[in-house]
Length: 101
Image 1 (cartoon, rainbow, N blue to C red):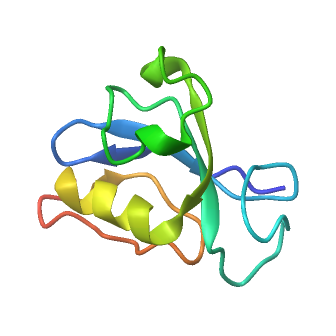
Image 2 (image 1 turned 180 degrees about the horizontal axis):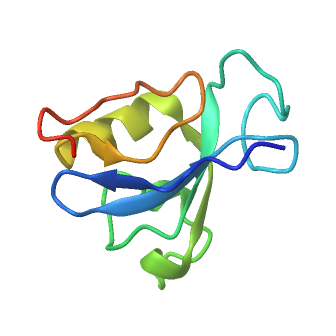
């Protein structure tokens, strides 16, 4: 099972984006060529674009977000200036920041 390195965005926002046989994703596979929904974990601050998927909406930074559509994840990445570090599963737009380190 691959564990994807947590994403750090240009504005400092961080989150885990995972997809595997044991993650809350579609398809539930360790070797999918593309995922349509992924699991988000423990964002560094509350993110309104993700709240409808929060398992613990009262503790948004200590929550897992199940079966989040990859299009929504891409919106979150764009909102926070793109990825400067980390990686996302296949199917999620790999929106790299122009300020990448």
